[in-house]
Length: 226
Picture 1 (cartoon, rainbow, N blue to C red):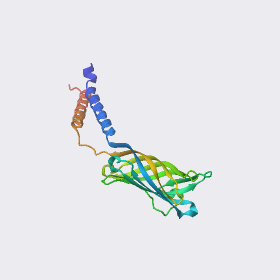
Picture 2 (picture 1 turned 90 degrees about the vertical axis):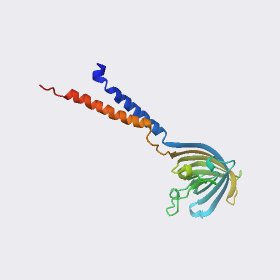
Picture 3 (picture 1 turned 60 degrees about the horizontal axis):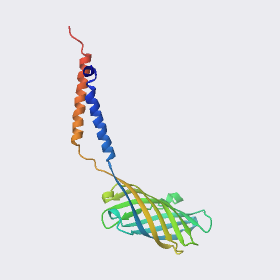
Picture 4 (picture 1 turned 60 degrees about the vertical axis):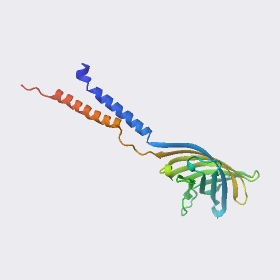
């Protein structure tokens, strides 16, 4: 009874199971993932004369890694805008963003970060972060997220985030040097491999199962001749 009524389901079930397994494996393997951390010595320069009428500054931050960084990302340069935020004295708070429209600047260019070294690998991102300046302690403390939108070398078409914290001594002239801790969480698309033997066999199985189903229904619907 199993053979006459349900036997044709076996190749179909096995074929679909194999196809689903193969597709799940392909989905799980279609990205390269990179997770690592780097400490950078930083130099921060704030231009308080940029737009004092709007309490907006321009910030330039450069970094060089304390030890050789993974994938050759030994340096970074970050350019961003910052705006003074309400705070209780003596704390001075700034909100930073690479997108000028966040602060109502509609005719200024979007800025960005670049992470690089002496090789071909690079990352490009845009920052969203904040900082607190404490003149009485002589410190700048901040942190936030850099959203990665592209790269070069092994990071071509990269996406992901870099979360960071940073502390620097405060220099009233607008220049200071400190330390930043960055945590990278990145993804890049993986090239689609050529069809494997398993994929080919699954294709053959689909064809065989289709023919079996067709034969089954043809025999079932066939009108006996007199």
